Length: 106
Image 1 (cartoon, rainbow, N blue to C red):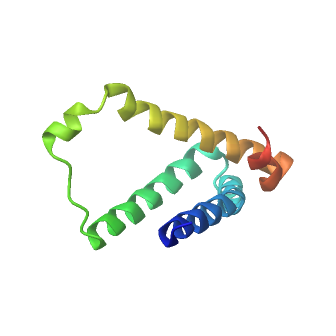
Image 2: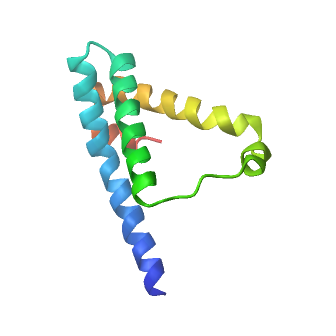
């Protein structure tokens, strides 16, 4: 296996291992904020700030207008909507089942 492939494998493993931890924190935040909707909004705002800072720090070039226009309109909405539904489901279910069981369930 190539060296770079190992980096990807380790990165994927670590990212997967962080999901139950993130779910637990999100569920705690939901409890503190009286429900999943405001806590989810807070999580997305903090995530947006982190992604923006990382993008600026890494000097990632912006896409051209042609690249932006070439993406099907459904891709602009589907990812965000599915992510929001997933996060609300995790925040709602995790306190009842536990974070690990929630993310391990099919």
